[in-house]
Length: 396
Image 1: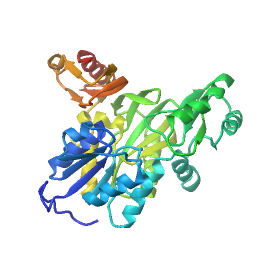
Image 2: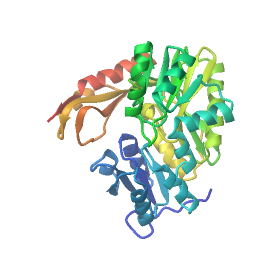
Image 3: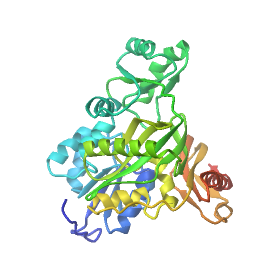
Image 4: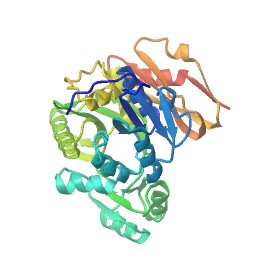
């Protein structure tokens, strides 16, 4: 990988990074990129997205439209293309990479991990990693047959979705009748297709943030997390686990990121029970549960992602102590969001608060994250939750 010379932003010699997706994760990537002198172009489907508020420039397009996406990239000629969401015309990225553009980590990883079928085939069949039993289905009838073969309880998920959308736990035959339509309505792609997965009897889930860089592979301490309807609500670091389980997690994560290729942060999701570990999913970018690294590490997952794509060697990553994050949700409908209680929320030692700057709420939306560090994970979780509860969100 070549050494980069960084040019001054907004000049003819600028080193340009294009963010495809400008939510809260993209916002933090933009902040770290700007700090290192990059010119950031934040792209999303709506105006005033969080990363657009800190980037030097922005653009609003339908990123699933291959013509619009290709035209924008050819016009801007970015040095780095950094996908932050799944809803992208990934075939265009594959084509442009062949034409000389640099996609982070690589275009094929972005395309493959957007599709549960592709990544599960790679993990289970090609790499031989331990996973749940699974069957793919392309119709309601095939889905019902797969559920009967896998057995209940099980999960039905669209092969292409994000943030847990469309997934459903099937406990009874009544659930089975409804799950196909639920999965299809929450999925993306022209052809409806789902994965029916056996329910693994695991004790906990972790995200193992894995950094592929010029010098090799490094790992953040394992992150435990709690989800509601497939969406992240809390995360904490480090998640206690046996040394045998941790070593297996590292081996699985190494296999998957080495196979996908490229440089950057990968969020490898794993199920754990005792010393046993199963591969679940991987995202080729910083992970929402990794918000905890904004307080738990000297270099957050976002700083690590930017350093890795710039070709830096990453030293072993030190955890600064038990830490936690707690998602701040807004409920209601409106285009004016007001926050109060900030001074009270930040009055304690070893706490922090990040407000994403999202422009509106329709129903429920994640608007920020509270962070806490303490002597134990239990105390850190309680501290982060306390910070979140002190912040008052009003929607008009």
